[in-house]
Image (cartoon, rainbow over all chains, first blue to last red; front, side, top):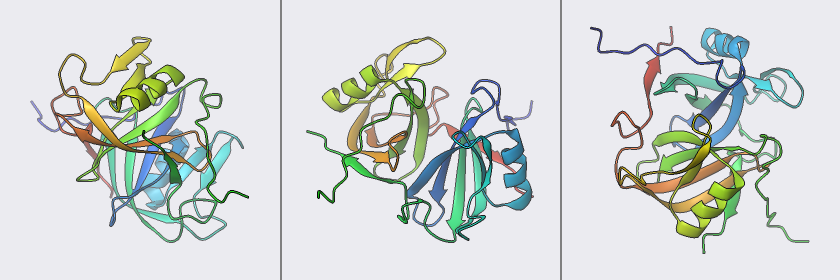
Length: 111
Length: 111
């Protein structure tokens, strides 16, 4: 029995889309969460840059394709049941369209 | 004008569910991704422990409610457009049902 379980991405459960967490490989900061369909998954692995599926525009989206703020993928991991992807990247610029390095900047007050 | 923008969670866009990234507050490891509806969001903020919505069981789920492996929330952040939540937690045990500390252990080979 092979102890290394090769889990494949489960594009069925999420109706064709896998939530993808992008973290900075150096700082470990969570930069963004975006959606990946099978085609963007293939392109991400082939190019080692992040590709997503834009739910609002309904199109493939090469992160940094116009801004130049691409993300070089250095590690990719699926979770236990293969329905979520984690990418460790070296970002060439801010992840957020607002110009912030990370999209997660709206802190919720915990009382 | 208030420079601090108070973004509210957008439960509409994700058909009532917000993808939620849970990271270890100390190691910054991504532990798991799960789904939150409005009720689990309220309970998480009220109890400072993680509550989710199980899509497969269609029920509220108090993480660690039976195993004792609860997650104490020490920081919560919404992303730029309020449709994804990031929780920093102190875990009382492994995050994964397999017993692994993190659900992300299936590394994808990058050729």
